[in-house]
Image 1 (cartoon, rainbow, N blue to C red):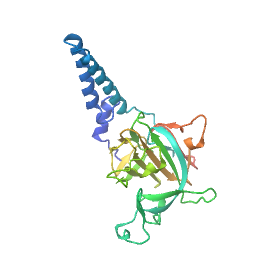
Image 2: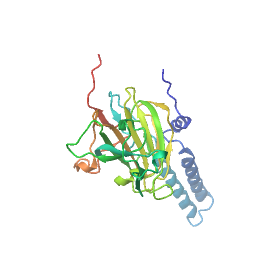
Image 3: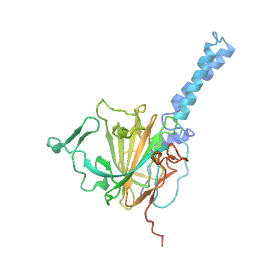
Length: 302
């Protein structure tokens, strides 16, 4: 029997009435400062209007914090076998990819054939023995049309703007089996390229690997952007998760990438690269509510 564990921070956040953990103090502090300043300015002395101005400014900051830390409840789809979006935002692109390299082991770092890149770091020019297990971070390349294979994956990238909900959720029900923090290359924690650029996938990031009850694995990377410098995981592997359960947040604009086995799943959203008039910025998806992938085949229950 699986016992679902709920982190204390998430329980407290739900009790706050829709604020993510860490949001209550800044919202209440700035809000109380603003209300106090307005009362003082109206009853005691406005000081040439500076006190009321300060009060209004504090209230505006409080509202900004409330918007930033908002964490609304979401209806979780019950469709069998679907993969949900882990983030709010617009779908940047959908690509069919294949692993062509992986991070080297300590013993492989001194070999001559190691690929050294100033932006992405060091790579061993051979994927993992079983690329679809996502045991370590791998280097993926887009698959040319007509060269598809059973080792391919689909990748969907979701761009989170500073105005979107920043709380991320589990795309499936199952086990979080790998949590890996990776820093970017070129700066202390960088490079912190804008999240809407494809190259930002090598910014500072947290790579999560989920496994469902059938043994299938899914890779979810929380990637920091030019403004977002902090990824806050609320759960780390090993951890049992419900579908749509909160797993953490990324502060300010950022992106989240999801990879699934291409032979078993089909994309269910529209990307910005498709130039669809109905979704010029890509389809807007919501964490824990929108379906990114549907299974290729679903067996009927007997």
